[in-house]
Every structure is written in C-alpha cells, then in structure tokens.
Length: 379
Image (cartoon, rainbow, N blue to C red; front, side, top):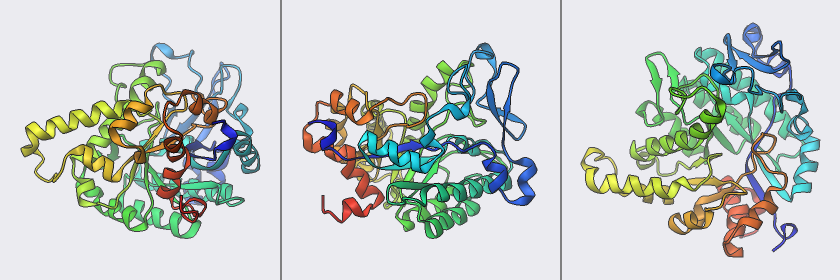
C-alpha cells in the first residue's frame, strides 16, 4: 500500500531547544549555570554544561566532528525549522503522513550527565515548561514527554507529576546510562528507583528510554573509543541492551507489572538475540535471579515496546519472534540519522502483512500513549 493510505505515529521525534532557551526558562537562581551554546575557532558550536562540552570533543575526532552543527559549515539553527517552531512542525507532519509525534529533547538528553542534582532538577523544569509551550498549539498531535532528574528520585517524582498533571504530557523520558548520584552511579535496576517506577506506573504513562551519545555519563564504548563514529555505533544499541537487562533481570518489571518501558533509537534487530540470551541465562542460572518468576522474554512481551528504524532490514524476523504488539515506529526527525520520507521508507522495506504494518505505524503507539484518536476508534 502507498504511504498516503497510512496514518503514522512517530514515537521518537525530537525538538531542538532554541538558543537562549535555558536562560529564559530556568529559575532565576540557576541562570548563571544555564547551558550555553558556544562556538570554537573553527565555527563549530557546542553546548557548555557544568564547564564541560557536549558532545564531547576529544580524541582523534577533535576538529573533525560537527558538534551541535548540522554539518561542518552549517550551525545548530540550520536544522529543520519544525524542530524549533511548532507551526512548522505540524506542516512537516502533514507532509510526511504523520498523525502525531512523540517529542523528545536534543540538548536536554544531556541533563542525565549533570552532577549537581539541584541543577539537574532546575534544567528538567525549564525544559518541560518550554516543551509544554511548544506542544500547546496542538497537544493531540505534538505529544509532550517529561524529562526528569533521576539523580534525585524524589525530585523526579515531583517533576513527573507536574508535567503529567499540569501539562498533560503523555510519557516520561530517562536515559539508559548509569546516573551520577552521591555514592557514585546508579543503574536502572537499583531498587532505590522503585518509588519512581511506581509513580510512572500509577500515572499510566510509558517510560521512554533514549540514549544520546557524547554526554557526560558513563557510556558503553566510551571507555575504549574516542571517535563519534565508534561511540555512536556502540552506545545506542548496547546501552539499550543494558537497560533492558537492568529492568527485566533486576526485577523492576516483576515488582511493577504496570510499568511500560519503550526502548528507542537503537533499531530492533538486536532484540531477538538479546532476549534469547537472557532466556538461556535464566534457564541455566536462574537461581541467581530468584526474584524473577518467568522468562525474561515473557516480561518483555508483557510490558515492553521497542522502536524500529524506517530503513531497518530485519524487522520481520524480530517481529515474528517477539510479537507485533511490541513494536512502534520512529523517525528521529531533525537529527542527522533520520531519513527524508520515513513512512514511505518503512513501507518500501517492510515484508510484513498490511495489518502488522498498521500496528507498528500507528495502533500500538496509540494504545500505549492512550491517544483518543486511536483508543476511541476501537482499532
């Protein structure tokens, strides 16, 4: 079928925080610490946060990476206008055949790397306030996602409740990486996060897990590679593999059966192998995880979802193994690795039946996010 016959929901689109946003929206006492875009001698732009550059600019790639730039010659603001302007975003959604887009941050992906928990909380509050304004012109199509400071569990719960209850956000985003805390780092399997998971489950919003390469968090691959080509290749799928292991193997999904994690921007092809490997370990070493009452793959099928890339070649085999209800569609709009016509690209590569294409492109996401246009239609 042709693209125009489908309506898609994008489960991983991005906004771009405009220059000066942090200073305008952050609480007054934190304005001196607000992230700032700076430019180096080569005209490459970087985000300065807590005295550190994002993305990291070190190693053999120094002077060859684009920083925040769209390209070596085009700065941060040269990216698609719809990433900054919600009216233009709606035009882009219409042109691409997308009914609604789940909107995640760009610069805000780096908040997980902030060492000061109070500053992290202030940055989350600033971002969510700005994002709410962005989404307000069409909240049924521009889907807000709360960013929370997992460095502080209580602050995360407060900001989550504020964003969902005050702004109507339909999801919450966290990083798969270890977060900085007073005692060192904390991974997603840490029981200290249980009150946060309980709050997410009680509010009925999905937990969107999204990696972002080059931020100041412990990151898979960053201990051995210093070129973005390498670190990006490793970080996105491997951090999601570690996050799914943490949440499933660590028992968070057993303790919180209404928690709905969604693993984003890593493709889906790794999932088949990873679930098989987890199941094999459970079969042979299950005594080491006595809190698990069923196979890891059963928890995933019961509670989790994963996004697939529009041009990914192995979706069908993964869908066959895991089940079509676990998959959602994502474009990565506004970032360098997106494609020009994502719905058409997906349909061109898909070997799945039309009914499954519709599940992945729209219906699964609509139910997950409880969108009236999908839930109310009964499809």
